[in-house]
Length: 237
Ligand code: NDP
Image 1: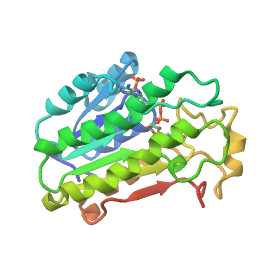
Image 2: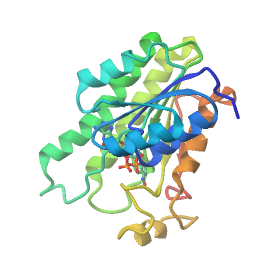
Image 3: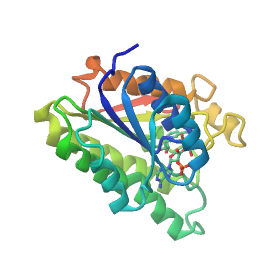
């Protein structure tokens, strides 16, 4: 269980949900882990106390704060960009500022964080962006802007994989389907609709997403790059 002993890991957006599961997974494998959060100070402090990871407040929508948080970690072995927001609704009435904030967090932040991390990342490093199956399939109304942000990541992942490949650095997206979290509770009002699109009719557990992140970040992941790793119970099938 010490597969990541001595590895320097940064998880952007790690205080809750999928990000917190990723923090737990890497700490369980003995990595040195720092995670950022924006507003959930209590959850962040609780997770830090539980796991021994370091919590750092840095809003991904603030480019300078984000870049400073990444740069402060020095030579990373693994960067996981998990922070994301979800704004759903009729595009004709959706608040434009909320949409732009989502674009800041879901698109601009992953790009700037990945580039900043790569400046000093160790060879054979790993950059993992948490995308969404909605990049490939948007089977209900109201999700255009969110799907747009997650599709944008795909182009970034493919391009950066080529930019950094000479150093053995891999760049991949994990694309979850419905996953139990505050953003998308397994018993929420949309759950039955989401399960109707799936072959395996349940929400994923955050720990299942974290396990895939650990695989991609580990030694067996060295040849996985520029790829979208979908883990969605068949939502996109
Ligand atoms: P949650 O809303 O449960 O948790 C989001 C996490 O991201 C929190 O730790 C939050 O920290 C952090 N975060 C959000 N905004 C910012 C910000 N501006 N700066 C720093 N941190 C931020 O979401 P999930 O765990 O469900 O989702 C995680 C990722 O997975 C997202 O990118 C999401 O789009 C993606 N995803 C989720 C799916 C699902 O069904 N749950 C399906 C497909 C993709 P804080 O509370 O401190 O703001």
